[in-house]
Length: 70
Image (cartoon, rainbow, N blue to C red):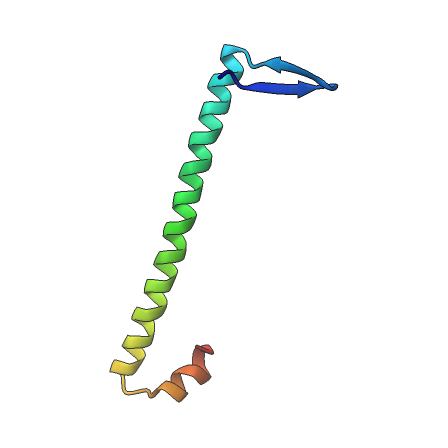
């Protein structure tokens, strides 16, 4: 099924160039979403690792919470 665009209430089929541009935009959006999800996962990992390092230094949970609020 061909993709379309709506211009002034009239639906047109996308040209080959517009199709290619839309494909590129969708591919980039997927990459951006994956990068964002990875950044969130990395942040959670860093948070856990950081807390463990503080515990390894001898801080207890109350002290860690006072320092970083977690």
